[in-house]
Length: 236
Image (cartoon, rainbow, N blue to C red; front, side):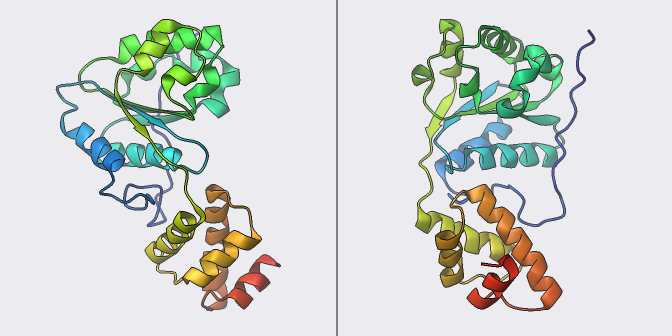
């Protein structure tokens, strides 16, 4: 079977607050963002590998999108590989990806105990490990807590710089919603942000989807975001 040709990840470019370093809730000056940005500065002469771990709503997936966008802005080929979406297709999805400049792999913990995937990822690490390449991996736990069966893969996962990212608190989520709204030119008060948190799912991705709906509703109605307007728009 012929190798799969790598393609650049299709990213939305119409919204000013895409998943970028600027919109990351931890801020552009956070240690993890500063590290990822600096990794590109020495990419020409070294292999850059970063491991991000954290539970749900920690923002680690956001950092992968931001890394890919940053890479594209620098003219580098890139892809974000979600293990949750591709694991059932088998390790063949890795074929040809070593030609990319930057690869981000989300939720690598899902391969734990899957012999075929573990071996394939180990071999991919070895092929990708060369100057000019950047690999960023996320998981929910540290490498030695993932129950990886292949010791060599566990060792590879420990190679790079590791960041443990805490989950977002409700205060963090409210602040992030206000910030993302402001980046769209949309005024969202702290009171409205907290109302959304009390009435809707606290999943950050779901909250951002709701913010997108409110943005469109606000523009269509030429109304500011108030709690009564939010209730009416979302039928709460």
